[in-house]
Image 1 (cartoon, rainbow, N blue to C red):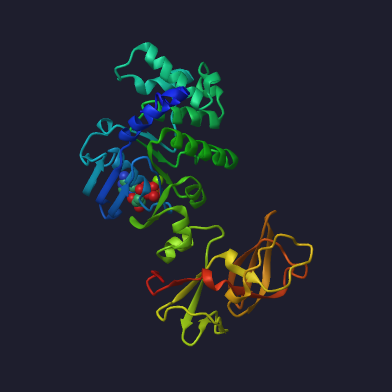
Image 2 (cartoon, helix red, strand yellow):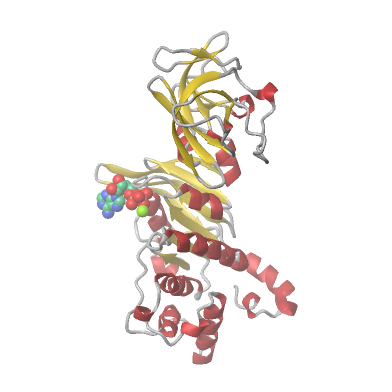
Amino acid sequence: MSSELTQADGESAPDTAAEIETEQAGIDLSNLRKSYGDVLAVEGLDLEIEPGEFLVLLGPSGCGKSTTLRMIAGLETPTGGSIEIGDEEVTRTLPQKRGLSMVFQSYALYPHKTVAGNLEFPLGKMDLSDEEKTAKVERTAEMLEIADLLDKKPGQLSGGQRQRVAVGRTIIREPKAFLMDEPLSNLDAQLRVRTRFEIRELQQELGTTTVYVTHDQEEAMSVADRIAVMNDGELQQVGTPEEIYKTPENAFVAGFIGNPPMNFFDVSVGMGVELLPNGDTATLDTSLPMDTESLGVRPEDVHLLSTPAEDVANVSRPDPRNMTNAIECEVTVIEPLGNAYELELARGDDTFIARLRALPEDVSMGSTVEVAFDRTELHAFGASGEAIR
Ligand code: ADP
Ligand code: MG
């Protein structure tokens, strides 16, 4: 599939592109279920993963991500439903017959084999000459920039280098799809960010369908073509990172995506919209659907009405016509982030978060400030958390 493309032979690229297209396999999950005794790990999951797509399964710990991935891999037998890979039904097919490659959270390399030996291992049973195997090992190592480590043993490598070898072992077989279960969770924060870009880059270069599991919404947002958000064994929403962020379909998705998370307010909709923190109501002057029970406001859509200092350049000031009525709050925490400030604001016992590009000079801990919300960015949710538009 990817072999010609990675030979850096520009002239052969147009021919191979078509060939690669035909090798990409979509993955179709229909009403997929898994229970362990009383525990429903995955409930009626319907998901169509496009050929060549980088799909991230995202959700909190225990929501059924690994179980889903393991069913795709063939390591768990579904309780119900079906799985197709490239239009072939594989629900009961043995893992090794599915043509997939999986990277786990804990990547076990063979400690006594060299990097080259580890990379070559998955090719063992394939019908290839020694020369072909060596060529594949070298090409994979070059792609991952570990060519100079081929003679080293895993014990001599850093965590990041070991992770590359593990990824190399996954791609060397040129599978129909990559399955990755929290592949970066053993790396430190900095390396995690770098490695996720590399995985994304590599995936784009190879064009291989990828299902990637993580509980980290920021990681999901940065690598995914589409994100499938799960909670409690159920699919909540599937969409591009932008769609999931801008138009969450329910309060769970709205609250799970975004850092700091969306603020939620209990409201009562009548003539205007009333915020209801502990009896101290305020009328927002905005029109929300009558059945709205809670209002979601992202921290970046909370605006301070105090005048910013003259010398604060580059502050994006929202259009005043889009602002709700002002509400009075007390600043209880100021967290400088270098390029922004996070403020915790309190109304009575209720607190919420504002994210500001700059801090007005007259605002400090304990200040009383007026804030308003950007009306065009409000999210309305009904009694069962469903988004109302
Ligand atoms: P995630 O990967 O999203 O953290 P999992 O798919 O591992 O979640 O688990 C989903 C649910 O299924 C959890 O409640 C978990 O405890 C349960 N579960 C997973 N594997 C097993 C198992 N082998 N036996 C019993 N329960 C399991
Ligand atoms: Mg898991």
